[in-house]
Length: 355
Length: 123
Image (cartoon, rainbow over all chains, first blue to last red; front, side, top):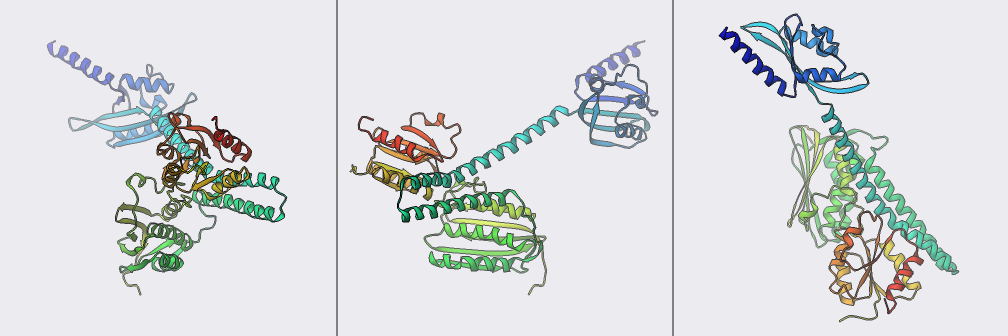
């Protein structure tokens, strides 16, 4: 009599506890017969259009087939953790996360527990957040584009008005030439922008000798570097890395980095380029002793249209990063008043012996 | 210190926009000097103390608003802001000596109207 009272009390306590949690708990015996379902489980099932009251076996619930099979297998000893599924019932789509685990009592299999969590709202919110982030990024890019392209537009509109005001043929010719230049500039801005957001139509992937690409980039800028009294050196550490990708694109990525370095050292300096392989990773380091990037700008250097230069487009590093990421790599920047180090990491095809 | 011969200081990092504003002011016979950076702009404004500065809002490292905040004598120099994208700017203009905001591309006749208005002795 007394022990029965205690049992009832314990049972009531356990029921209260289980009814207080937001996870749905469904308990079945070895044959799939329903032994218990807490309030949350009833709520979730009700949302799915399944009235619990008259059901006796898990098979009658008409659950998602995968979930139903998992409960049966759990009763036989298998465990399923952190499963996800989407169910569509009565025109309502629900995202559920669930576990199915065996109950072992006295060393014997005694059924299974199905734990269900309704994550519909969390999934919807995560989707909404992602969409907002996407829109915010697009908005920022478009605002940058608007800023850029309205400069040549302002000039072009002004030129048309000036043309209206002058009869001098020489002057008109000059204005027309200028007008054409402004159109070219608008086109350049748009081309750069499209390059940034779109992968190239036909990317030619081949095995690239990173040292050769670097040498060809240095050859392009040597004249400018000499003009500013900047020494450029390349130091390859064996084995010299080879990577997979489009050599033209990698050249463009490196060129933008090198140009930035040179523009940071207009008072003269040294650009030291080194490269090597560390396991499956190739690295190329561009180290200048220029003016460095002020701390307040360091977070922005990869942002499209961010520039502090008088004639910069703000697309160089953004484009470099897009190319490097497209090849499965990453760019890291560290900068101080003593200069800037840009390191490009790429998946490497390394050779131990490399001539 | 101030030079009465300079009526307008142009501050824009874009050479094309600077050029078209210079052409417009030439047409109207208005004297000016131009700056390609915000820092240079502040220097020229504080040197010449012109009645008007035409300032681009986006100037690379510095914004046009930074330039306006750097004006030593805001009572003397008013600003015409030009921008390619004027969203939510109004709140930031509080307490700054801004006469007008023009969006690019602008009509040079409109630009000259604002400039001449600003340069009129009673203004």
